[in-house]
Length: 187
Image (tube, rainbow, N blue to C red; front, side, top):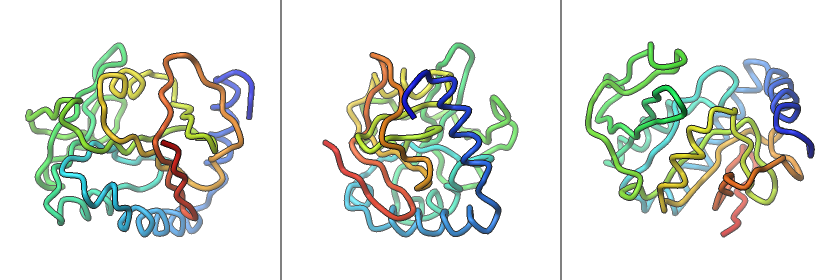
């Protein structure tokens, strides 16, 4: 999958769309199983993660899992020009469905600063076997990750982890990538 990012994102989107509902559900269940035993996640006090939409992994069960274990869980609230905040939630009732880009967002105002986050669970169009992340093109996570020293864990389906994805100088690699069948550790 080497080449330019735009072409790589188109290919990743096509592959992601190839998962049917049953395939996504099976993948999501396996992802949750792999994440729910991850020592880095279980020992973390604070987790900044995404709310999966569309063809992304369904993270709602993981949000419930983490809240049920008393973790401080934050979800992104996005703003124009690639800026986002990590907003803490105490329950699923604190998520609204009409956020920026139509992605569900937290309704509260308690911001978890990047330097206070233990683990970031990052989405991507795709990852590679070296931990590189191909984002969706808005730069939101690139900017946020650059300000944080948190453990960076990518979450994606098996078929969207490639030998190599295109990167730029500002792209930060993940410390780990978790898929439905494996946990890849890099740093």
